[in-house]
Image 1 (cartoon, rainbow, N blue to C red):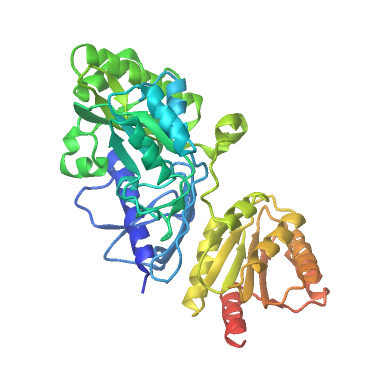
Image 2 (image 1 turned 90 degrees about the vertical axis):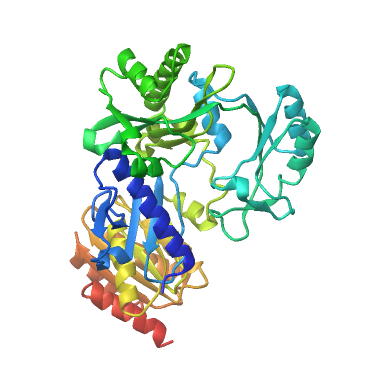
Length: 480
């Protein structure tokens, strides 16, 4: 039976997928579906809920468009470990927007209660909003282990900002999206609180169906856009953007009109839309979502809250942005794996999975579970692997005290099996491996790899195929 966390994750993933599909108009609002993510099925596969298949049971994704990596095993008791390739705090995203001329609230960042107090005084705002900075949603309803309730507070008194910051900074904030013990708050954002007289929704995203960027907007903002798409699809406006010409003046004005801006505000909104598109291009974003994209009683159009997703393939030319990546909330093992260009996902079983490719990892975890075992993790080598990476991978796997056996499942397309075999034998000798090791290799240079393993004199169990490998790995644990 699936754990509550996995069930919650499945609901969240289905929501993300439905949002994408509904906004593109490619999924009927009334349809009842089960969603599966994974490279094996393309970016997104939709299965009728009435016809579940093995594909529903386990799935992993590394996808720039959603900027997350998931391992979801809906019918097995595992731990979900979400990971975004680039993690920016709210204040970092707001600074990017401000640097590109997008209208946001005035704000300062503080890492101590005294700094927060001084920031509140410098703002000279009628009302101030104090926000804890963590990479999780639901902050407003979160609880600190200091006893303070809520990670977002409004006040007109700068002294209260200092008092609240004292109960935030250095304490853990637990929300629906954090681990049970919460996440330590290291910084707070002290911002000018603005009244919102009207809220709209606006986003620019890369849409595969249109082979390029698309503007999506709705006059109903401040709420989940998928709810609007489901209940009032006529209030969702979509406009394709020519990647060579960019957003034209008439397109921006038409979208501003669709969003309900009138008079001078219409031109102001159109200008903001063009600046948001300029930001989208300059930072190699895959999505810039502003909700709410609102207007104030004083006649300002302001981006009050935004989510920015980046194309991780553009890291080589967006070094300053990627240098801001906040990895402090990642699992230590994930950060260690990333140093060697390895992708690590932690689970709660006892059989470590050492694979190359997300689809193969999904299948490996699935077949271990189908044979009565539980995957402890999987570690993805990727493509251009070297012996040193294989050695580091084994170091990571054996550092997990839960691991009682290791299953290596490699398909040598780009990967040379002989390199894997040499790395395995080196790791076994130098790390003095004390847990059973089952190896299944197939593909490029596999015969040379098998010779290396056979002549190594090491207690390595070879497997002829994945089914055989899974059975042997499960049996090695059961026989302990």
